[in-house]
Length: 473
Image (cartoon, rainbow, N blue to C red; front, side, top):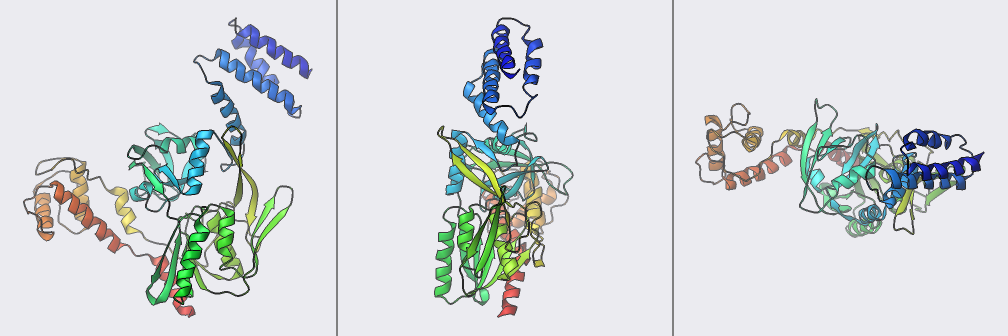
């Protein structure tokens, strides 16, 4: 029966290339291919070849056969979870550069959540971060293209591009009545994964933004310097850290987790792989900061700290990505990234889809981010004065209003009250006070506004971490 069906399909392909009866016959033949899902894989692949050849020969427009083959490969992985992906050669090159810490785009980590492309976290200092994108934002449009049915790869490819080019994102954000739009200039993203400093009261602060292949070495360097200065109170900041390489987070954890399990890796066949710490004695008084943008490897670290009592976890509930992926390089230059296991904390807690609840829950108000959500741009391409209307006028009004200048109604109209506010701002900042938003005034206004909102920000999560460590001394 099966061989007869394949022969029939071959005959149909030959006949349909010459006659319009194709449209009647093809649906029946393709449907027959679904009948026996337990049939021999080789026969199924032969039938897939016939389908590809038929599309190549008869589709209304010419189609590249490699494109069809890549589409078939991708179709396999689209039946799996959002983290399992087939990469073409070009796509894998982009992925590899991200793992290595350098790529061209807007600087954002994304996933699929609720069937929508969702921001896990923007990379600190990236164009996406500076534009004000937040964890949990749903990306609906990329340059007016609706991406609600797009895969991660498809959406990401639209956002990648040459440095200096622009991309416009339409974002759905919880609590906002409509879409928010962001015009973002692409750049060459060089990910600085580790930053550290010494805070007041001799507290070491290490911020890890991504677990790439160099992060453990960077953390070791930071700890060496802190050790040399006798610092034992440490804050590890994993907020908005989307994760990364398992080996790297395990190596870092060995500096802080007492002897025993760091993470359990459970595979489909029931096999369990446990990564253990060999640390005989805890060296640091530790606090770990997390939020809704802390995912994957960040949750491995935080979960190990929480379960072993090696420190205190502070912030808000984490993202909840508890799966492990492996990458298989292919001879065609592409790669397969596939979920192969789930991880559990040392106490065998499941994180995937659940996240971690901190020991101390602290919300950050982030008033500056609220301002940035609403701001119109100041482009610096003209010099508005009285009676002029425009978005740049609105942007100036908004910034002056936030800083306490009397601008009247914030409506984008350059009226008399705004003119007086501009004059006062110019006088306050050593500029010629004549009420025109010239380029020097616009530049100074943006500079002063940036300084103002930084002063207005209070990092309550960090403050709490400092307080906790001080009380433990």
